[in-house]
Length: 238
Image (cartoon, rainbow, N blue to C red; front, side, top):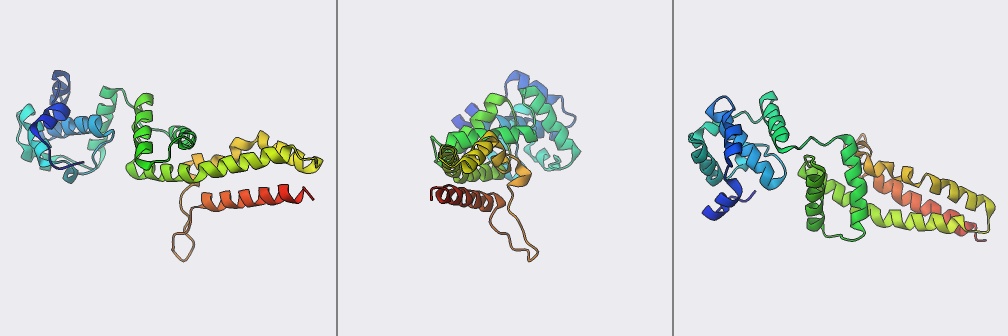
């Protein structure tokens, strides 16, 4: 979030509508009213909630406080952790018609992104596309760190998926019944080959006993799969 805002930018992005002001005022206490209003407008602007007070520019806090007729200092008393802020976020999601993303949503988003990467590989453009996709599906986007990991994963995996698919289809047409049959069987389950891409728990970096983080398991698995398939298909040609 940028720290410097012009008055026109504040008016454009941080002005409360009558309905939004009424919703904020329903909170008990000036600190919760200002906090709720900030969470609401922040989500509308950035497609996510802030995680701590320090993220919020002072100019924005002062502008919002004036609209609610409270002191900006009350924000120091707003709880940024615990059940209270979770309830605030839940109320805002309900107000905006947005829901928290599920594991299934994360899997669908990753699958969709792998397809998008075939057309676009610029990271910032892909980030914009992810947020737009979440808006269309009316879900709260994953954390920025999670989005970055998914984008890097999709960029790395898309050419490997394409290459392995091509090798399997070549193998299915070989004049070697056993190899061709194996390739056809794998193609029937092709989607299952990439479960480790779409399931978050399966595409995290691995940490061995020595504590040093090593390459993500998806990278090792994908490279080995491609090498094995290439070896099988080439060997069958002799």
